[in-house]
Length: 192
Image 1 (cartoon, one colour):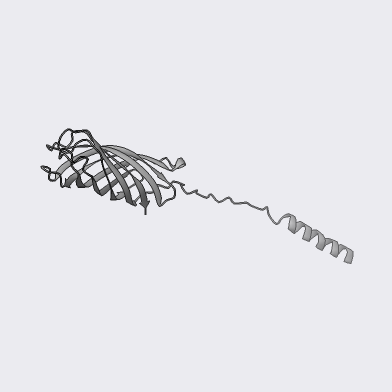
Image 2: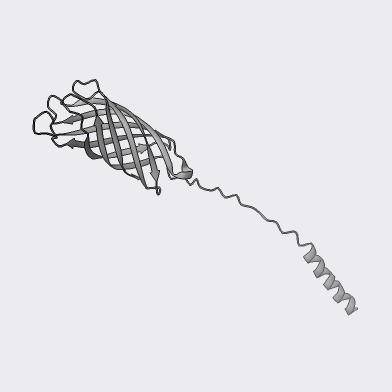
């Protein structure tokens, strides 16, 4: 009888492990974060150098002016932003005859940016439009209102540091300013 009891217990143990159930595997879906370095709601600080180029036989002559500036931008989304910049530029006198003179000018300019980030290569081409005022010590030219349109490229090394370069065509109806003027900026952009 003991033999039957032991055999029954062994059969019951074997049967319980066979009917213990099947192992289920659950897969958890993980959302991969967008690797784009250009973010929504981004504040940017620009530190830049600039060149101001024009052809003119008027008061300013035709030699370029060099300088730099600071800018502060805010992007509402990856694609649309606004900015404000302060520029300081000028040149030395090119001759002692009095026909060509040095000057210093500063500009306060507002910008609207439309950019298209290419996240796979950390590059964002953009266009810009805006306006502001230029002031300075040029005789017969006080403060002058200006408008501009242009475009540029920004390359990001990290989410917070990038290089940019842009150019814009400046236009003004003011007498004495060059009719055809190009401003080029190049510098560092810090994003927060």
